[in-house]
Amino acid sequence: METIFTIPTVVYLIKTKNLSLDPIKSWSNITSLLKTWLYKQILGLNTTDEDVEKRRTELTPWLVVKSWSDMIDQWLIDEIREPVAAVEVVWPHEYAGNIMALCQEYRGRLINMDYIDETRVVRHYELPMGEIIIDFYDRLKSATKGYATMNYEFKKYAPADLIKLDVYINNEKVEALSRVVHRDNAYRLGKEIVEKLKVLIPRHMFAIPIQAGIGNKMIARENISAMKKDVLAKCYGWDVSRKRKLLAKQKEGKKKMKAIGNVNVPSDVFIKMVARGD
Image 1 (cartoon, rainbow, N blue to C red):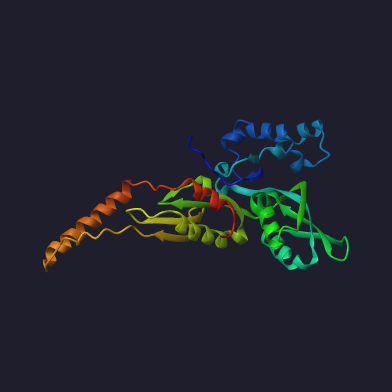
Image 2: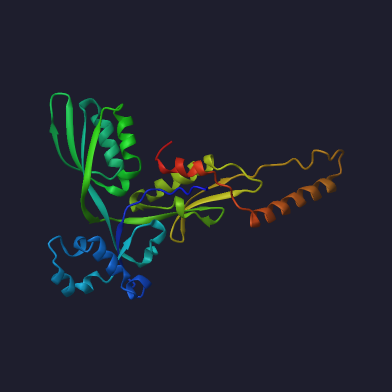
């Protein structure tokens, strides 16, 4: 069986500017909000069934997005709310610098800090769940040589300046590699993604452009050069016109191949793209 790999994601709440979208016209967005109890993250945790009926219009523009492929266009989004977790991290004091840098990279906000004893520290953070579900724990262990421990639980939904970062391979969007990121990190992550894919994807007989974009705007690009075949290997002598014809024929052949060719992306590429860094 062919296995499909995708990057782990969380459920987002999206407030749209366009009330003519199909989920809103069919009221399926309201059904999703009521079924998952996410309406309380919009109307308030103490909301009763009677309050829902009275304030139903407040729920109308909200969508429940469970997959990044279902994310609506950026210009239609009025607000995005993401799940935030309360995270408790315990580690030896000598690794404080490593943990602080890691939590800052993952958009963590320090709530408070306590000393368990002379050598161990416990810090309480608020971290977006979309950031920590991928590889935060693995990197936490690496940064502390395995000595750190972590507990986390869902706390609330909070507004965030998020955007969808799309990945294109040979001008085709690859939803399995797309992700939702914070706007401040979009350019850095886009550059990291295309550089990493350039190394991981094998070369083909035609050049492969790799791009990262936000909507219709491309923010990063790398090219995988084509494999070269020496068509002049058996062309002896100084027949310049013959050489030019062979090179021109090769060039036209590669153009046609690029137009109809599909890029073979090994399945392990998707696994390696999940984790950050090398």
